[in-house]
Image 1 (cartoon, rainbow, N blue to C red):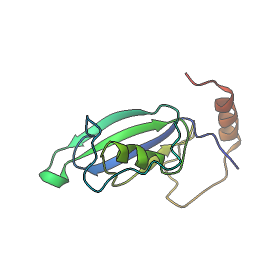
Image 2 (cartoon, helix red, strand yellow; image 1 turned 30 degrees about the vertical axis):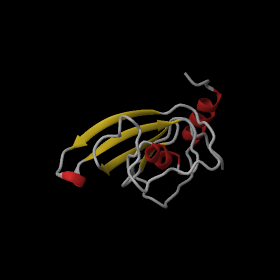
Image 3 (cartoon, rainbow, N blue to C red; image 1 turned 180 degrees about the vertical axis):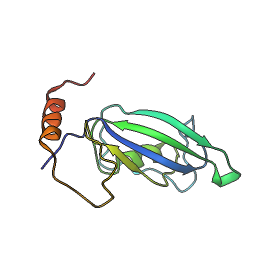
Image 4 (cartoon, rainbow, N blue to C red; image 1 turned 135 degrees about the vertical axis):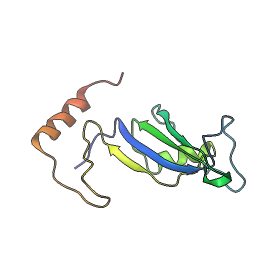
Length: 126
């Protein structure tokens, strides 16, 4: 079953090196590959928390909302600004959130969830 990736919420909980680089510079050896580069719908990023630490142990927790789910999109976005990703956690796909499901698991959608997805697919983006 295909699903709408609009409002795909992912968290980047723990990236060493602090907050994203304001100039978008990349650390040495982290050049981004721009093969198959296509523009995506705008994403929103919110810094949820900055954890101070000595040197490499400082990190930021980001909340990133993407409108379409391209392969490695969040990792590529963070790489483009020199912000390493340690871990990603998807917290929602469209109107559906299920914090009980573990990585690699799946389940059938409920009738209510199917209706929510259909409604979300018909609703134009803000």
